Amino acid sequence: NGDRPLMILSCVIADSSLELQGQYAVALSRAPNLRLKETVTSGGELEDCLQRGNAHLVLLDIFLREWGGLNSLRQARIRYPRVDWLVLSSGDDPNIVRGCICLGVFDYLIKPFSTERLERALSAYYQYHQGLTQRTNPWRQKELDLITGLKGRFSSGLDEYPKGIQVKLLERLRACMEERDKPMSASTAGSYVGISRSTARRYLEYLADSGQATVEYDISSVGRPVKLYRLIL
Image (tube, rainbow, N blue to C red; front, side, top):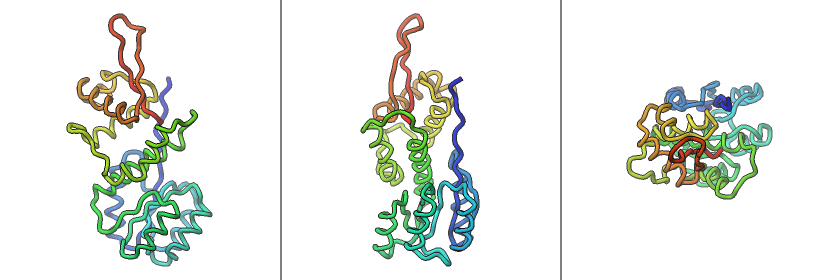
C-alpha cells in the first residue's frame, strides 16, 4: 500500500551519574522512534555494549569513568563507524569541545543544559539519520542542505518558526508523512494527526516553503485540483 514502518533507533546512555542517566532516559522516552537500549557507567561497559552491536546513537559524557576522552572517542569512531555520538559534557576545555566536533559528533550539549535542548537534539538526530539512510533518489543541493543543517540549525533552536507553528505538532505531522510515504492533502493529514484541515494546511505550507516537502496536484477528481504534499526524505 506504499506505507512503511518507521525505523526505531537504539540509544545508549554513557554517564557515570545515575541521576543524569535517569534524566536522559526520560527525554528519550518522549522522543518518537528512539528507544533506550542500555545505560552504562564506565568506558569498559560502553565498549562491551558497542561490541554487542545494534546501537545507533550514544549519549556520551566525554569524561566518562574509565574512558580515555578524545582518544577513546577517536578509536570508537574507527571501530564503530555506523554509530553516532551526542556528547553531553562540560564546556570548560575548548580543546575537548573542538576535538569532539572535529571527530564528527552530531551535537555537543554543555552541562547543565535544559531538557528542551536535549529533546530538540534527539528530534534533529532522528530526522538527520532517516534523511541520510533512507534516501534512494539522487540528492539535490537544496535537499542535502536541509539534512546537513539539522546538525546545527534545528538542534540548537536557531531555527525561527513562524507564529502559530508548534514544534511538537510539526514533528507529529512529519512523522505521519514519513510513515505513509505518499503525497497527502491537508484534509488527509489533518485527519491522521487530529487537527483541522486549515491548521494542517498551514503546517504543510511551512514544510513546503522551508524546503522540507514538495507540492504536486491531483487532477483526477472532479472540480479544483487537490494540492498534495510529500515529505522530502
